[in-house]
Amino acid sequence: MQDWKQVQSAIAEAGNVLLLPHIHADGDCLGSAFGLAYFLCGKGISVEIISEEKPPENLSFVYRSGKMPANMLFSVWDPQNAEKISKYDLAIAVDTSDEKRLGSRKDLFYQAEMQIRIDHHISEDSFAPVTVCNTSWAATAEGIWELIQTYEDFAQSPYRKEIAECIYTGILTDTGCFAYSNVTSGTHRIAAELMDVAGNMAWQYSEIYENQKKSEIALKAIAYRAVEYYGNGTIAFLCITREEMNSVEATDDDLESFASFLRCIENVSVGIFVKPGNKAGVFRISLRSDVKCDVAAVASQFGGGGHKRAAGFVYNETEDVPFAAFKRHLIGEILKWME
Image (cartoon, rainbow, N blue to C red; front, side, top):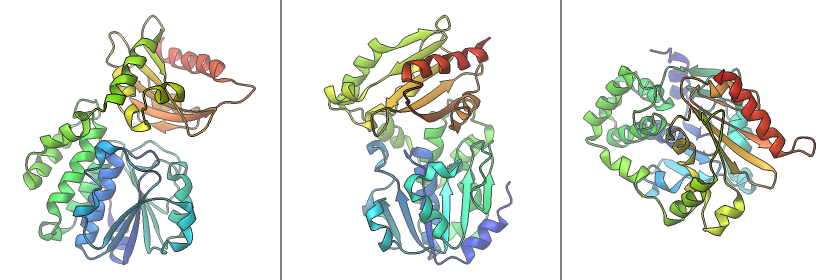
């Protein structure tokens, strides 16, 4: 159990709270943000969640506006509306390892009277005055549930079901449906507690993983032919270009599962998935591994981070180091772990 006293004190003094998921929001940061938001709204606190970009469509059930309470707002960040944004008593960054992961909303975070970070990533960036971070949590959502359980009045919350559903989403997605090595007996106990509150949540698997668009299937057909192998077949490399995406009318949402499928290939220990960034020469790189390679350590060499088995970073191509040269360097760094 973490020491939540400073967080509880800050919440007690706050009338309005800003919650910030990290850029390229995933199930854990959205589930954590909305789970905490529902809890705070149940205590009469006004909450606004601001995402850097529109979250993936397969997670839309988390943020459907139709079920939000009157004192909860969710929006996608528009810098042009910065002057219209209220100043907050408290800002909380969830599942965010460093301030770069706040993107263009960083100033919003620091404009609040108080800042808190709740996370489970390895990080040396203490960008908030109050940080609660536990790398043994399988998901940040585990930590949010732990925090909520410190309040005796949770049982009276009008949003108990919504809270449990959101927390479950965070855990389900960040554990690969309870398949990853980060899962502990405690993770399963929390999942049981959540089901005791919200009932059977098998529907979430269907919402998240069984709604593949035809454009995603078409893009996977391209991807399967494009996989390259290195290190005697122990490293699988895949790069998808914007042109390939456009050829099948695919969006960034269609790429969500690509990093994981590389690790499902026979004898592959490390998967490297490269997808296009928001402009030419920018590449977003996702790494997945088994026990042989600490990909968080690899990613940290290039300004990224994450977990030992799942990490990522952004590479900006330069004239001195074109992507082809960087690719060779990255594979070389990973091969060192495989020796």
